[in-house]
Length: 272
Image (cartoon, rainbow, N blue to C red; front, top):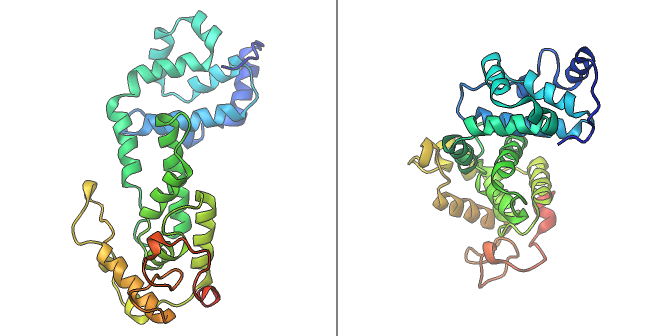
């Protein structure tokens, strides 16, 4: 709730509103009630926008109303008492909208989007990261008061990688996802930006071969773990590591996903 209770002439308040929501209203701040998941995304986008703006309670109220289509705006204004709007500002309007639009179906749509998030065909890892971060923000804003753990976010991002080089990077950089998300993402970017050619056997794979032939829930394809094993086998061959040894440190008796060694075998050759 905004603490500034200053009241200005309505035309002055509207001018201030237009400064940060745009005129016409920016697309990301327009609420469209006709699409599943739209309310949840709009709610988070508006909350982010209003939180960053030092404004009065009156201006915040006018801002949220300006983002609503006319039928919705009229319904809210009729259902919320003016004294409550004056006391609680935009917050009481959001609560009124929640009662109608933040349904179980809407929340399931957000949860499903989070469960399905993965790198799309021909999507760069940076594009995927941007889309992933937005999806994570919406999901945590609605489901987790204190947010997901750093490891949960890193693991989810890593599990969504689909490109052959990205999957190889996942196996080499941090197989146990011990790094925080930002550190992991930057390490992966650095690995991919290096541009080291993949083995011929790997570059010859078609996009469909790096995924399972069956579709997962929601029609999206999952990584074929046998394909990951093939990728790792090619990498060990290139690095001169015995096939049964750890791809990360080169030593026997364990695999990369349980490696605890700090030294990476032939690290310079992997990065040059």
